Amino acid sequence: MLNHKDKTILNVIRQLEGMQKIDAYDTLHKIEELLLHQKSPIEYNEVEKFQKNLSIKNNVIHIENNGYYYLEDSCFLMSVYKHKSILPSLLTYEKYFFKLETQNSLHSFNNKNVKQIFRNSKVYNDIIQFLRANNVKKRNVKTKRLLFIEFLEMLDMSKSIS
Image (cartoon, rainbow, N blue to C red):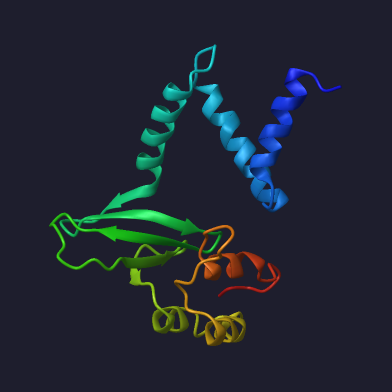
């Protein structure tokens, strides 16, 4: 028979179902960090407010008068941002930009620019194969992450990107 604490742990584990083990560890670590800054007993509304403030601080960048760029997805090599203009937009399409972790410049997130950025890298052939079958903006139906970011995470880490 399971006690209350065991049932709570299983409910948390159910939320992690389908994730890679390393992503689950990362999520649990972030929960630990959130709880570190909370009073006891834990109040969901306070945690949510703190998380939103932290998320905005860490995931939004402002570039001059062009608007704001919200972090959409990232991996060890690249970050992808969604652009939100300061001016009200009449167009309803979303603009995505990316930057490599080793650079500060933003590039439009499309197949052509990704090919160009990785042209002289050792993973270029792998990326070309991926882009033949997929668009960089295509998402994993289950995780809602960008497939290209998931692909970069799966690349053999022994290959040098440069």
